[in-house]
Length: 286
Length: 301
Image 1 (spheres, one colour):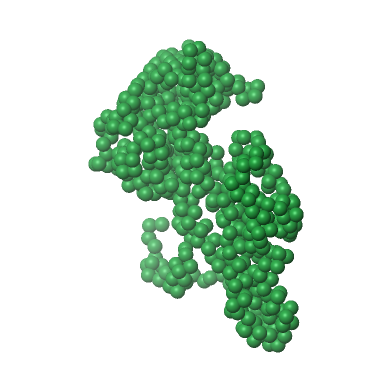
Image 2 (spheres, one colour):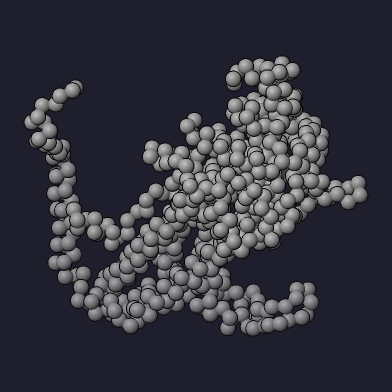
């Protein structure tokens, strides 16, 4: 109990007030200031005969927050996974700042990228999982510095410095040497966010980041995401937290049966839903 | 509930531990059995403990022991290296590689160790010379008579390693399959390249499951090395046999081998405890105590 409580004690060292920290360009990585526009067009994905995504098209402006809502099984998570190429699509394309995810365009042909190139593409896209998926055998610090060192964005010393900055952002500097399983769910998810941010992504994808958490821990994770919303990174969040969507979303997308049935500003979709499925869903969750 | 009588707070209640009379009966019975065994072993002159003492540290026995240990070490080492490669091949997306590894494992799990050793020892009937070159051409970098290359020791190491790697491969594959799918995904989402995902993220976690079964294999290999006696290679067991065939002191010499095998297994078991302890970092809240820590706890009461 005392552990969970101490999270809410404000830390004087936190640099959270200045959102610049996240987009600070690194000397070795001059491209980090690229915006992060996502263009999804006519995307379809089947699992056997089941259509998980059915002709989904969606534009996400750089630096904005998009919240994807919808009943379970509506394809929200699948859509998110395709943006990071964790899932291959059957039809349609995704572009991030003009680059095709998983493919390279030459003329009017799309060439499938090799594993190495796909891994490189993923560097600009951060992914936060519902179950955190921290590496349990590595300390918090090692979890965060692993990817930037492997990708040679930073040397070890720089990576550690950066990791502490990020831990300040999520308010967990004191836990640098703890192992993930010794932390609460909320703390683990904040570490997972810090780990994803360590690569200076243009885009951050959140797959139901608070669904595996106790209700009292949801707030601390949402607070971190809210801070990110102001930092210029493009955020795409799959969630059931309507209140959070209302507060931070620039765009709310409502999906049913693999289709986008409605999208628009939070007030449009949440307060004046046009589609009957959206109305029915919102009545249940609100 | 507002006022508690004073005498309650001043005199804490006495706790009476529960008693289990049957446990006492069990303990007495165990002690009795132990005493019977010790008495029989100590007083029956046919155990010939004098002979045992005379041979236990004999140079011939120790050299046999050394060979057993070296065979175990090399078998384990090559088994792990080749077994890891086989396990990764079994999990690879290449059907051919996967099939080849499967075939290897199928073959060497099917053949008795004895058979493998004898086939290898007679390999020179199949091929007079072993050579390294470019297949289908006459270019050769190295060529040597098979008989010289495959002496007792190399056949023993080769045979043990070949069979051991087939079993080790399946143990390692099992460990890898046991690692949660989310770990693969998280590593992929961070863009970690394949070798890094395998050796930094997945295998260290798989090791927790691999180690107990892995040590089982090592222990069974340590004893299994005794099978190379068919090559007349003087490891521990063969040495003991040679000696008692000459001196007819069968039981005490078998006891020499018994005790040495017990020692080997005990050392390996202790090693296993500490290796397991090391790899449980992060998985358990508190590491299990080391032997010294446990002794201190016990001494403190």
